[in-house]
Image 1 (cartoon, rainbow, N blue to C red):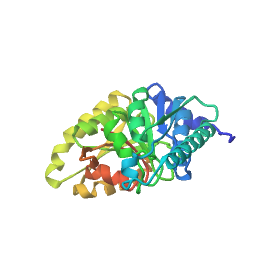
Image 2: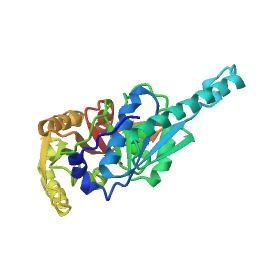
Image 3: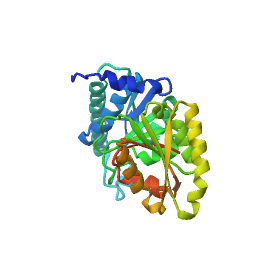
Length: 292
């Protein structure tokens, strides 16, 4: 079993968030490309002295969907169930190694992972998702971050594909005067209190630029009542360029975290996202904390 080296300065930085985020949940898979997500969740749980709930969840596709010609028999189903159980067992071992004796709880269910995490997030303060490439995923084994954002009612920390260690020394808040942005701001307060620099960024058209100043002033004053010092930046550009500008601003101040509202809905069984949400999910460069 690996030995975890606890970083005392990093732990002290996150002191302000400990009382708010006491329980974290993440979906655990045995696949190598899913390990960055697990490492992120375990590291954050240690920093917060929080309990990490690891969920092993897989589900067989309905036979009618996976076998349209009716050729698959009971032996095939038994073999697939055995593989699924092996995957969950391996995920449990990976989880135990990652938490390394820290506060944790291991749960297993036979269900689509996103549905299971959404349901079980009623007992958690934060969901850790992402940490693997977003491409051609089997939703019977893989947990779609977008679905979690829109369905769970919890803040969702989406890790970049390679994972990494969340420092949150500098944070960019993507702002527009909407319900989702207000929700994201409120949900991110625990981590904003830990940051040395918070930058409120709004990307808007030229005609709207003069109107946002009083909105930003109100948000900055509100953050100050929570002990968060922030400044604002207004960028005149089209909405299609918003994600690029946010990433540039994050690069400029060395931010490893963007806070954003998650915009989208379900239509005919598919998830339809707003442009900024879709871009931040499709081209992940750093951690993003989403709320819907």
